[in-house]
Length: 267
Image: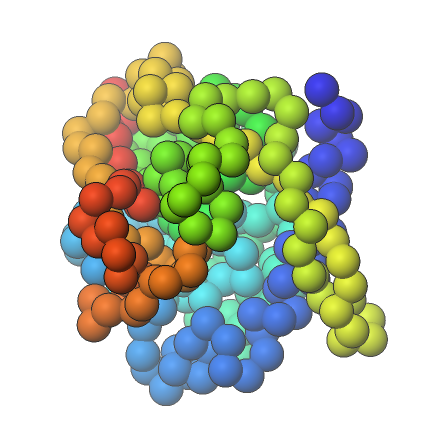
């Protein structure tokens, strides 16, 4: 297996670049947020319900736009991300909007040295588990920071969808976990001069069975597990965005699991 610290450092560099792109006008509802619109989608809204007055740990929060939207709904939000630049963008947005979210620069595995709180809710949504090298220590960390009776919600790309690249014609990756990560060459962004530069990301597939088992080992009882034939972003050719805000296949519609949600309770 490749050196995990080297891999995570490259992934952090990759997301440092993307945080600059996300903060540009027109990206990810930034102007819409300032105008009072929300970036939150129906699945997470329905699954978490009323968050008013509740403490929420937003894991792998990126540049913070969803965290701020949860705060607007009344949650007391702490966002965590391993990209230092993304956290800086999130803090700047928080200050600009005069909100009181807290943002912490840390890999999820490092949280025990940086937070002492316990939370009512923990959320990991959209493009999260792909970046986690080991699902068991991730689950252990989540359990550590939830109060007894607290709720974890995961909404993410279905691991079956990660078996394919640009379309659903050819299986190109295993559904099952492998120590060596997938490596894809993608365009990132050089934040210093604004030019696009090649950057390699690394990710892992975690089957749903592995995820559920890891949560159970650390005292998180699954309350619901739902699978959906749509996703939050355009992952495959031939997808179209529906009125629900999600991307749907135009062929094979309703045939393939593309996204899932899992809600678990801390014992």
